[in-house]
Amino acid sequence: MDLKQLYRNRFDEADRARKAVVWDVLYRNVFGRWIGSEDTVVDLGAGFCEFINAARARRRIAVDLNPDTAAFAAPGVEVQAASASDLGFLDADAVDVVFSSNFLEHLSCKEEVSNVLREALRVLRPGGTLILLGPNVRLVPGAYWDFFDHHVPLSDRSLCEALTIIGFDLLRVEARFLPYTTRSALPQAAWLVALYLKLRPLSSGILGKQFLIVAKKPGAGSSQ
Image: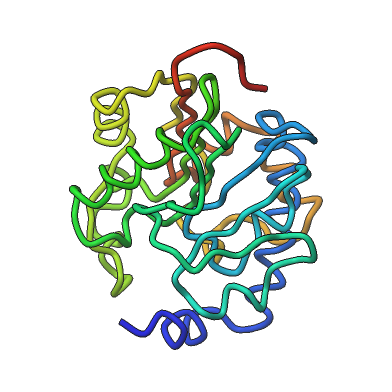
């Protein structure tokens, strides 16, 4: 599949600008609590780099096979055109945080999802954090397949089972975190996104269709 053409067709410049606003608010209000200023952070399936550009960390690495990704990376963000299941450019125990949003469902099969999770475990330092966000197939069973590149049905429960088998410790699991897509009922203005987050869990209980899972690599040290 031509990733470059697919995502250029799906998201225009206005869509990308709105998504950047959403991610900046999400980082400041949610994800930033697990990431320190001296951390090394890897974004798997970084896409247009909305998360990794918003991250405040010493080293920021975007991983994506889409050749367009490098064009959207902010100054200082390293871009690796690599498979998320083979992070050979990173040593074991070299990363503080691995993040991925709306990516795992695009992989070809559950075996590939497992390989990505195992590779995340390898590169994370003991005590390092894995943050996963994605559409919950339990909550959007039909609409899940409206995207041509959705291949793997994943729920919060199935992904937690996989993480536990692979060797992660679960820290936080939310079946309902954000609406299904940024084109859904999630407000786009920065202050409205902040209000949505402030009103959680009420707002998530009504609109949330994506899971949030935070897990830790066992061992010495602790995450933010």
